[in-house]
Length: 370
Image (cartoon, rainbow, N blue to C red; front, side, top):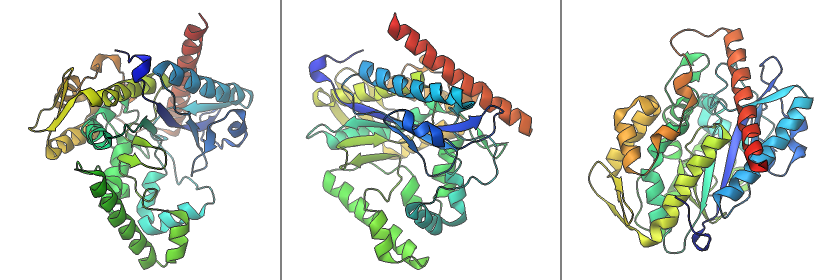
């Protein structure tokens, strides 16, 4: 269902893709960055990020995202490069960082577990904060976090099966295990003051860990503030005036747009919706959203990471919360993860999904031109 223009809520997307050469090997995206606005290097060498501006409608968001990806793909074709919409590179040795003081500090604080983060490519969806509704928006997105299952796109880490949502497991259960408040989903909050207090506590924890690792506090403060020093999957972003959902994997643009549409539609209707927290099941109707208690949400999230849409409980929950499950085809469930992948298998898998991305963009551009 679409929102009337008078009720439109701005939304934007950030999506990351692995860059490969014509043989499926990871490659640097240096010459791809300048072909369009919103295209940037990520913190590791073979990863490229493509961002949209805040858009008032899904149609605007779709047009801008596909246009920017299309421009990158046109240049990539000239360079014999491709973009891979998989949440991990499937198999890779150590992935080099780009030189960055911010990354150096994170690497020092997190330690050897920071290597897990280097193997992750994801999607961030921002929706505009509605005055007076910020906490309902935040809590609703926390409850909707199991929808990450709809975009799971790789079960592999370093060539072995890890989970249906390997990237989410890397982030939440492995990378920040020593700083568990950083990367995991936070419980519901009662008001903005409580959110701000949490930010300050987590920032102090991060700063203390950095100084304990021998980093000068002033160096930390020069690179991080309370908002930018956390990696929890759902955040209030005062810097952008948005609520940000960071959980989905990178995926085909059409799937990402569809997911962002449902998220924005749900959040936009909170002004006329009663939001309450109770029970274990959750439900969305035209005028009510029942958010499950947080412990129940975590069980759904863990199943979404571990089993994805193979979990009947996750599918039933997302259906009750307003998602059209049958409209999604997460790539992770198409990938045979029963055996060991050779280097050739890995390269071919990357090439296959790079071609899928190209077809997805061409299909969208063809429809738009009709």
